[in-house]
Image 1 (cartoon, rainbow, N blue to C red):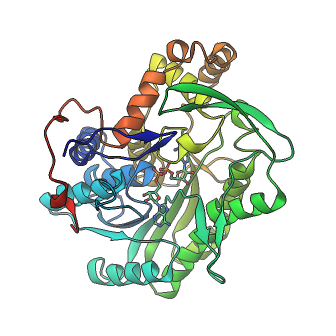
Image 2: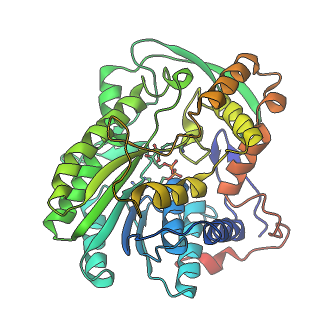
Length: 397
Ligand code: NAI
């Protein structure tokens, strides 16, 4: 079969296996040419390893100097009669292939990271492949739902402002149209449920599981990713339901830091740059900001993708330093280039002018769309998209 991009709204319904392979190779090539990670972790567990920041972290830690063994947990769809499967499925497959080619252990565990079954599998894999202990746990899940462990009922996150409605725009990646939208404020229940899904409680429960299983090594660190953003994004992000969840995550990092002090380790919420990922295109109101940010940062030569962010995080913040550098709230900041004053002034000025008629000219819509297509294995020059693929080859791998 020939696989073409199929997009519904902001969701990709198809993925190209060999394009996903090209994306993995591109990221490996990048980290191999950068400053190497010094004194990095040797055994790493990544929760949410199949795309975005989690995948980039896995690639950086394996190929960017640390030579880590990795266990990657993700929730992806393989090919079936229903469809070709998700990009993350192919990312897992090809990452493992590339890692094993170079002699690195790479274990993929596909399943619901909220379940006790996956927790058991991970502890078992740590026993089997990591001599029983892990040096770094990366929490990089992004999801809209989490089952309540007591009742099995689903908590659902709602990406909404709090206290007042907010008007913004999203751009349909299906039709390339700018759609103005007004988001009504979240109810208290929606805000609470979003904290349950995207806040720190599951991160904490994972670390507790690993402590109880005696799976944490001396010096073990853990990180989870957060976003803060400039003031223009606060109504929809930091002051909204997602921001509440992130503040909860920041607070969790402090309690986990106390627990990890017993292992001479540490826990850090790491604030990253706004980027196009499967998760971020869902945030209404954020897209015009992303278009302006990409435009300005590319002009200034400071633009980074997930892989650049992760390699810089591990070389300049988390490893090879006497002390992990943090801000006044004990957050690791790798969003420094995004929040650079000059950059933000230029972004704010651009945002005043960007509208539904000119967003393709004034903002970097082309770059935004291209990144989205690449996330799903499309738009790589090295891939022959006209060549038929036998999808059965990838079933049950
Ligand atoms: P992503 O959508 O690219 O990756 C999410 C990962 O979570 C995937 O590997 C997916 O398989 C996995 N996952 C989701 N539900 C799961 C489940 N139930 N069980 C197992 N695995 C599951 O997302 P992205 O953007 O890399 O987000 C990761 C973290 O980074 C999130 O906390 C997000 O808020 C944060 N972040 C993202 C930014 C952005 O602009 N994309 C900026 C700053 C922080």
